[in-house]
Image (cartoon, rainbow, N blue to C red; front, side, top):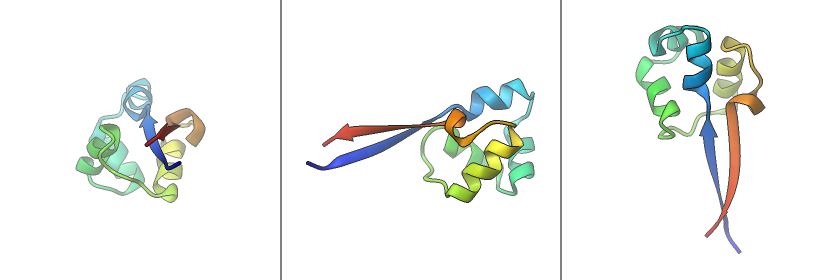
Amino acid sequence: MNKTVKIKNRIKEFRARHDFTQEELANRVEVRRETIGHIEKGRYNLSLILAWKISRALESSIEELFKFEELDN
């Protein structure tokens, strides 16, 4: 049986808690604003290093920001 992993994130929610715009968060983690938008919408498969940078910038853990769901195919 094949499994697909879907990743949901709470970046927008945590970004709002810190009153950061997408641009401000992007500058803190050294990516473009568009990248943050794509990540928030689930359209970008980010690296573990970028996930770590975002979690640090938002003062949270990777586990708080990202939820992994296994789906049956």
